[in-house]
Length: 633
Image (cartoon, rainbow, N blue to C red; front, side, top):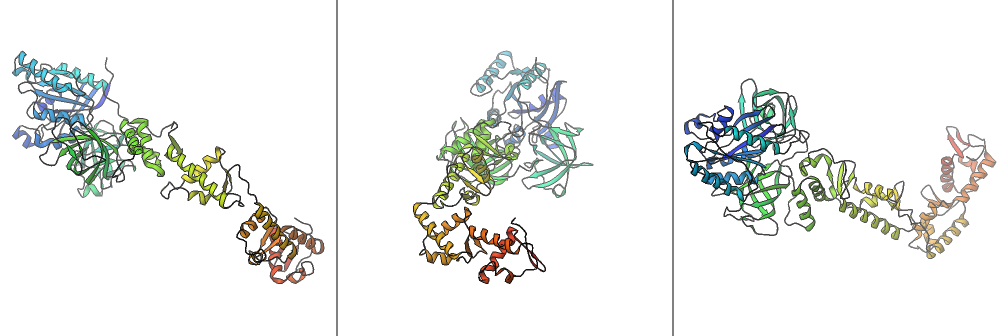
């Protein structure tokens, strides 16, 4: 019993005049050839659309594509986004060149489901029909569709139509689910004006959902528009979901100026951005006779757009038929892509399908070669799921990857990952590769050790020094995040804006201890009339470690720099404070001269000493003069 499936896209494929459009009309009652020229010439030129619901539990949006070789560009535009392909082969002609090219295209685009309808079965005898079915089977043998169902049909007699419907429903039951929670994206395959609705764009909603009244962006130009109305298969709805053939009536400046065209992409999320370059895994089509060469100019079909491009190969000059390689496509116009998107490459001239592949980096930096680490990350992107997520984060390097970008950069359509494992680390909303985290922690610890070696008398390394230890292009919050991570692990001790190794203690070397003694003796001799730094340096013969030792003694609280000018021992200042309280405690309106009897120093020393006493709370400056506390604070 098949499970209920609705909103699937069923696309036709096959050689011209093999009966694709007639078969769609027999199944749905809809003639998808709507253009006068199509009627006159008897061929499909543009994409045609119909809804097919064989049961209440199963429905398809059918995309009927042209079979003529001159309209393969249109065929590729319709084939992108298909869930199932209905390959049509006429019984009176069998497999033809366009049959093979269409089959190659749907394979390159990664369409998973395929059913074959052998049409015009009433025009041949049973023996011939059996030979055609065998030819189809041989054509499919070397593909992923070797087990596809093959159903003989006749639209004139109705033979096989029920069997074909049942085969399509069985294929539908196996089709992958699309997520409405994913980022919304609708590649535009038709644009037209409709009275009362304005400009209407149609396409297959590849992912996510779009609702009436929502604001969308039209890429690559980036213009905004508002959705006035939504239709799915011609019916007005409040919103469309992934996998549905969707028509959006749009309003906005870009729409009014007629700037929307086939190949544009309608999106709802800010994480999408156009790119002039794609990193891809390229596969040269086996049996085509074409090699893909470095620097070759080709036609790239992605979504509903065709754009010219140069192929830049990594470490090789060509890709032989049937072989694969990493490459960058240097595009001549910007495209909108997501990791995991499939594309088709056709030669510049003569025009034929020669290759295809999968997008790995939708917005990459320009690369000339690949390191082993980059190759591993790209291999992860090609595999999808958690491996793709890890690959995208690894390629982001020191900058990290915002979780909001996972949908585009990793093809991750399920919100932010709940569990990251050992390969990733989350800092707020940014993900970092475990290798970057290890390297960053190593650089920070080395910077702390260097600071300890060079400044052994300071309490530790300022955080600003540690931030500078990482590359300039690193995420601005990465250094602080790694310092906090190291502190939680007990590998760093952070005190205010200073960090040190747990085992580190600032201490004087024997030489510095001797220097410290000389400095303290000089300060003891000068009392409250302490010397300036330059005078101390003269006393100790300009020793190169004088400044460091003074800073160490100050950090220990043994000496103090008054007014940024004079060094005084703190015990001397403590005694001075006691004398001031003892002799002047409780008095008010005192001027500097009133303290001279208690503090017998010159005026240049008295002013900074009084400022120190103010700061300590021993004295208080009032409009009428200073007031002295009655006791030491």
